[in-house]
Amino acid sequence: MSTYTAPVSDYLFLLEHVLDYEGELASLPAHREAGLELVRAVLEEGARLAQEALAPLNRSGDEEGCRWEDGRVRTPRGFGQAYSLYREGGWPGLVADPAFGGQGLPRVVGLILREIVSGANTAFGTYLGLSQSAYSAISAHGGEALRKRFLPHLVDGGWMGTMCLTEPHCGSDLGLIRTRAEPAPDGAYRVTGTKIFVTAGEHDLSDNIVHLVLARLPDAPAGTKGLSLFAVPKLLPGEDGEWTLPNMLECTGIEHKMGIKASATASLAFNGARGWLVGRENQGLRAMFTMMNSSRLGVSVQSVGLAEAALQAASAYARERRQGRDAGSAEAPVPIVAHADVRRNLLTARAFVEGARALWLWAGIRLDQQYAHPDAEHRARCEGYLALLTPVFKSYFSDRSFEATNAAMQVFGGHGYIRETGVEQYVRDGRIIPLYEGTNGIQALDLVSRKITGDGGAVVQAFFALVQRESERMECLRPGFSRALNEALGSLRAATDHVIESARTDPHANGAAGHDYLQLFGLVAMGFAWAKMTCAAHGLRDSGLAGMAQSKLDVADFFFSRILPEAGYRHRIVCAGSESIMAPHSF
Image 1 (cartoon, one colour):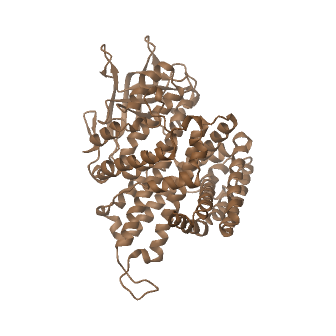
Image 2 (cartoon, helix red, strand yellow):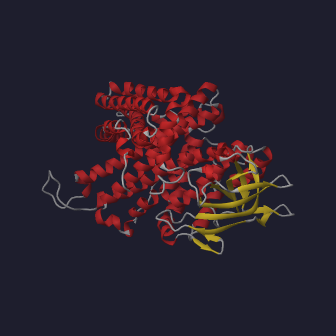
């Protein structure tokens, strides 16, 4: 049975030596009290909670699953106690505004905690992630009265949140939503309709659940321009002010799923339920995208945590399992970590996990700078980078995480296919990530259709310049790595020009090129992160961190020589056009 250890030393190595957390973030007025020593203490305590309270429930939660009984959902044994510990520790308010009871730590620290929780127990983490996203949407778009009504409860953890978009007849095409909202005399609204695939839509962990629901007002414009967002709580206040009265909504069932079985994916019927408008009328999609972008970054981090857990299990097994003969030795049997193909699988997973972690941490610091940096131009630049990279993170990370968990399972051989080792659960749990929060195909279409041409292409060119700068820094240290990154960046530049040009004459060009273009972009972005780690590691080879520095250089060698060359292959597919896809076929 696999176990999980939070990689706290790796987070701290990246923050201190690769990403200059102190200079980039802790030096800003808003975060001067959140230095690395405080972050270290927070992460160590978060690791203890994850390892001792959450990880032991991962397999049992998967085996037991959630139970739906007469409109109520029971989470697996131990989940309620674990959430009580999470709440008692003040974790729901870690990065929230102190005005509502939060601790005000940088957002990047909250994202690290999310990776740790996801590594320990992915299903448990889904409940927490949706509440954080609900907080973000209400905080950004709700009026003062609405924020005072809901945010203290979400920050305290007594209430949790959800996101209600999908309906039985429509998924990603939100313009087809039929749920309606009627104004009520008391200033609230009455929401009627059905929502499905609602993560954490019903459970027994918190006192109340705040559903953020997309719906249409009477006479609203057709399509997405006619959507508004409403906060609809499960329980309403009674005459005594206590939130104990049932609202007019019910859970009509939960899904029976391939993975994350301890996460309740609910269907909800709103039968004239009372709710409050979040933001402006017919501007609901704008408010919801605040929540969705928060969730997309969150599930990107979730992808890394899940792959980390699978990698830890596979690495431990490869050191312990003895099988076969080492090609250069007469000794037999040997630990399977001596075999080249086993090492290839482990290094594939490790190159993804460590590179993706460095990349999202870099982005997490930009996220905090977007809100806290004193320079308006710098804030706008950070916002642009995040808008560009969010679909890349969501799709590339989830695809490569699934590849990494499969590689970990392969290390176990036939033992990986049975439940006792635990690694097959990581494969099942991770398969949802390319599907929810906008399928990866839609993320790719967003990247090629909108993001790379945003602001006249200035943002994407600015990011390319960042990659070029890191390649130049690395050139005198590891010229082979630099050449590989330059070639990949050249492929991405050429592919970008091709995508923009071909879309002018071929209506199917973006759809046909999107997946491979996004994979190419992800490879180059990972090269950017590995270049930063390579430069930092070179400077630490004679320090007390020499062991970790050499480890980073070894994995960087694998990435630049065996993974990044895929960029050329992706470029060729991007330029292949849409004809072979859109030609008449029998399906």
